[in-house]
Image 1 (cartoon, rainbow, N blue to C red):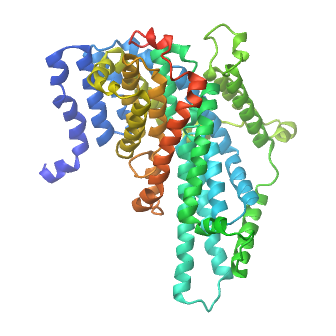
Image 2: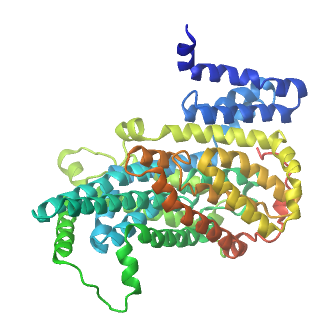
Length: 542
């Protein structure tokens, strides 16, 4: 084998060589902390180089912990599957129901028809729909569902230009019109991405980092933190909403400058050309035609809406902040948010999409089916990734690695907590653009929790802003899977990502910090050191 051929097989070399090179770390020290550090370093190398699929590389800790004697196989099995995993599975099943019933298409087209075809309203429609869907569905799923609709809008814009264009237009005018369409399309695609990204931090189930925040706080402190769907939503949904509004307003500066100019004019109405009016009318007519093709809402679509509303209500009122919810009807810790979503998810596998078909043919087609929903479209890779993340984070805490790192960075507690929150938020949101938020959350949240304990600060005060800021992947293709997906389409360049994302990213960080210092104290008491943190043992609750 030549060196050139060997270089082509570098993934095989990295896969076997990385664990061997790092082996002196646990062999020399022989402590559990060193063993946990070894597992973390190997996992980071695999995460960055991806010698095997990313989702599988996170499972390496399931093998290394028992082999190194850091944790038993029984402990690893307990950490692999827990309440947060059930919540994720149930949430993904509901996503399958929404996608399978084409409810997202109906929502998008209806919103476009209500808001109108002007560029700023197109941006608002896409960022609003993506924001709402991403509160309940995985971000990547929302972007995959919404991008075809965005591409269809571009196709309609091009068709409208071709049908209504003047044959005597100069080449320069035609190029200018094409540039406007390309710019509008870029703005729409970025509106989908940013809406889905920010919407992901509005609820616990909205994104991987927020779900990991819930998982890690439960593992480190149990249910004494009162972090549940309702309390999280009271704090983070208004925060995400404000961040989305600002992001949309900023995007209008770049992709709909006419809207900004209109705001500064004293006249109530601006003059538009007949050609622009005709183009907008034709676009609206095309959208109306697509919406009419969907027909009347089916029984299946209505059922998904009803179950979805029921799910949110049950989540929110199980243990809402300020008063007792329906959860008090059961013994403590007997029911959780995962119990609710799994119960309703199971019903979706038998609930019919068409009652008439049952009456006429005696045949039932459920809202969610094992084939094709679970076998072909269900994102099992997220399950594997979350499983590995659970074990890696829990193992690092239980072995004392996070405590050791917290001691190393203890000098940071000389800063006032409010200032340290700003530093943490800016640091996390910066390195997210280069390493991706999944790895950052798994590594940083347990360390920040232990740092807060040692500094007598509420761990939520450090951990929640870090999780939220890690979601703000706005600028580079390597920051998240949805950014890589969008950049891969060739519509959005890295320059456009940076130009559009830098200002909203920074402002969103300070919106998060502001809400943590105001609403956060009302909901979680973040400015006081709680008993559940003072009594933490430093190990995972099994």
